[in-house]
Image 1 (cartoon, one colour):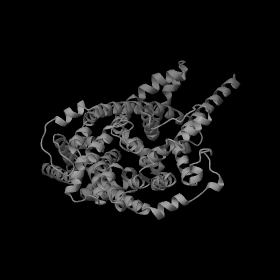
Image 2: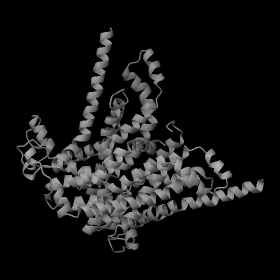
Image 3: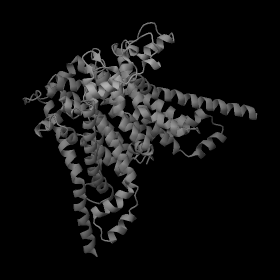
Image 4: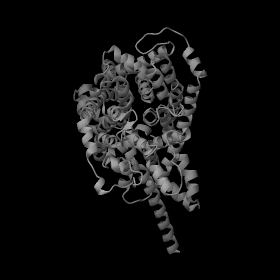
Length: 298
Length: 284
């Protein structure tokens, strides 16, 4: 009997490792190894196609004194903060609407999800056209509604450019927030609202004292997810502004692309992209904490 | 009394529907405008006195779509994207099924640590590693080939779909596996004959998401591939239909819409899988 259990355990062990091996190979060769190489490259003055020599943390010191890089850090924080806040606020709003008893719910849900389904590399091209300096459809509508006299330069004015890339990010990410929040809303027991209603609570107090506290763990998880994916965004900025005007919309990924590939300074490019790493660590730490805390969102 | 309640619910309904309608307009307008642009003659497109929200019958044209297929390598890019996305998805799903099964249902040392590693790599932004990956691709002698993408896409597809599948496999009861074990099946047989058939919805879901992620890639194919005939759809449209300051807007929009079509078709047929997958990815 004892023998059989031990045999069974042994069997389990080996097959488990075998099953995991291919995934482990991918992670070690294509994630862990490149990651270590990124760190090594960032400590050298490597150029594309040429090995460099070790220069310590010089790249990092250079970057911290570099005006463009500092601006990029500011941009990344502004972009991420406003995009995530807008997505969560509008997402909860949209989820509340979808959670009402409505006709054609599936149709509404289907339509609202589309921006998230369509590859954003392709849909952002549509936005590029809608932000065109001369033929922007937004300018046409705003002019004919009498709201503006002269064209808004959506992508060539620094502030409007930041506004525009945030708007496209929100357009694309909102459905994800809405659907996850809706899943959270559906799981809140109706009885809670009934009890609160008989106690004389209105919809606003129901929302503040029942809905929000019960959604909180889910909101936290979604916000963390979105933070890491928003701050590392590449597609929207690359297509719409390439970081311009005056580097006012550069994010870490687009700047590291410009410096590391177009500029050929591989070492410095790697150092720029590694500034995403602290954000990643924070997000991983809080995610694991929330998941392990058994916050009731299983 | 009753009348006022009815008025209240009516007003409430009006509020709900008009709110939803505003969201729908926001969501769909860009797509509508792209479509309109792709079927409008150039002289109407670039005429500031005409209403850009509409198209007159006389200004309808298919020339932008014709240009795509006759004057550019659009169909080649489409095929390249299909090859790359299907191959990398197939490889990644296979790897992920094996890993997710072991991580949720087998008992071996390090199983929990490996689960966390999968989760962390899932969160690693894919724009973090493209520079060192250029070196890896060069060493493997894969630069400027479709293989460079088939090999590198699993870096973000495997962690993602493994994590998603782990969520599904956790929900399958252990008992069905035990009965198969008594019948003398080994682990691989159990996986193929018992677990995979039950986990089909999860596998469909992971496949759909992986395909979309691969299809949407811009950065890796921009970095690893430069010859026109090897480009994927996203890069092809972006680099060949915008030449310096000249934008072929009609064809750009047409190409973007045709390019989005495979993903949208999948979505129409499998909408419920998408919805369940979206929530599973974040919640489970």
